[in-house]
Image (cartoon, rainbow, N blue to C red; front, side):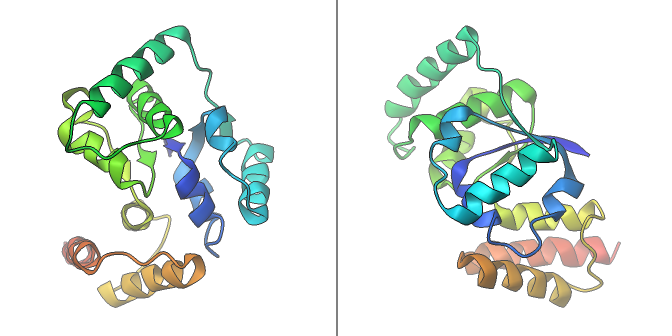
Length: 184
């Protein structure tokens, strides 16, 4: 089982997914910054966060002065890079936490993905959207599929539950990886 970091956009979407309990089978522990929690306002997401806290799966990350210093440095560097869209403070905090813990960051935020794509200190960071998480849950045996079509149905169920539709190209790439994995 893994340790991970979650941001608000991920929690809000994942809270609507009927298979949300699979998150606890994939991750032993998830960290969140308290400022991320301030962004979570929907009833369903607040209840989901409460469930994760009560089961000991979710914890608030113990932020330090050195973390704040890294945040300020990262913020200034991101602002100076035109390839990276503007990010809010909580998004950058999650990046710092994930880097410190060497843990996957769960997010749907495109800007976070751009930081990992273009920033040298963050280029080795693992960032998963819900699509990559579902895919990695299959590889880890947390979710079971016997065919690429079953994986597609799993993804389509997530899309129906959350109203979050994945780009066709990304979905096709994930399907191909799952197809190869199933054929091994």
